[in-house]
Amino acid sequence: MNIQDVRLYLLGLQDRIIHALEAADGHAFVRDGWTRAPQERLQGDGLSRLVENGALFERGGCNFSHVRGPQLPPSATQHRPELAGAPFEALGVSLVLHPRNPYVPTVHMNVRMLVALPAGGEPVAWFGGGMDLTPYYGFEEDAAHFHRTCRDALAPFGEDKYPRFKRWCDEYFFLKHRNEPRGIGGIFYDDFNEGGFDAGFAMTRAVGDAFTAAYLPIVQRRRHLAYGERERDFQAYRRGRYVEFNLVWDRGTHFGLQSGGRTESILMSMPPVAHWRYGWSPEPGTPEARLYTDFLVPRDWA
Image (tube, rainbow, N blue to C red; front, side, top):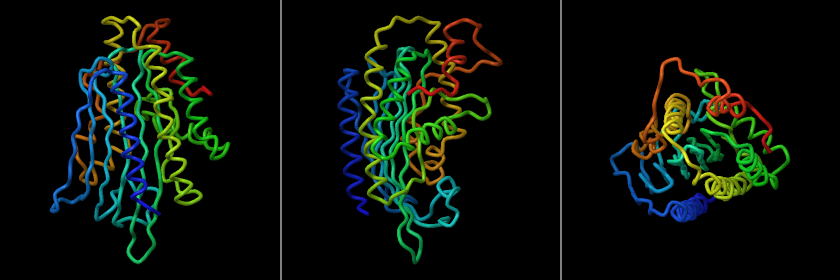
């Protein structure tokens, strides 16, 4: 196990993604490097890259972090109770992009590794990550492209991986209190250490490397579509669901906050504007209603 190799890969991945996003947006992303002070509960460092009020992205960011802590938080040990209380290292790259145009979907991607250091035992490492798409106005060809790119990235690691991780994504990115999916899914995996460190790291690299190919062609197809107040209003309403999921259900958000992570970076995923309405639903037959009937349902997009 070589944690330094993972760190170098993640920093390179962040660089490549930011270069592609800056080229698409036309605005530079802000660089915000940080280091935890020695007396703080968490030690480590990170680099946040953020754009606000860009030409394409109303708000978006891609963060790298590498932290060490004295005790795994509850969100990390719910499936591994034997590691409760163990010191840990965690490193990863996480991004969320909220485009201005409602026809361009919001996207999330995360790749990470967690290492527990139990007293008197060998280090235990596992990987997690994936990507998922949250459209406001759905297009079948976009959903198919996103899922097929995810499927192809996982293909070298076994035929079972895409259907398994797609199902995991559908189940994970689900607002239980609303009884509805957050979007059209993608792939998601967590606590993954099958085949050992090398296998998990190789698969995680394949997922991270597939992100720009999965997302940017969709951006280019939709970014110049005309929209008005109606579409922006619906986008803000659906962004409210995004906020609800991240604060109520997301394990990554909980891990960061429970472990004493950097709040500004953790909440980078929040959209710049979101709306809530009491008891609202779209009129049947409208494009807004079609999101619910045709896209916010489990489908074999690939």
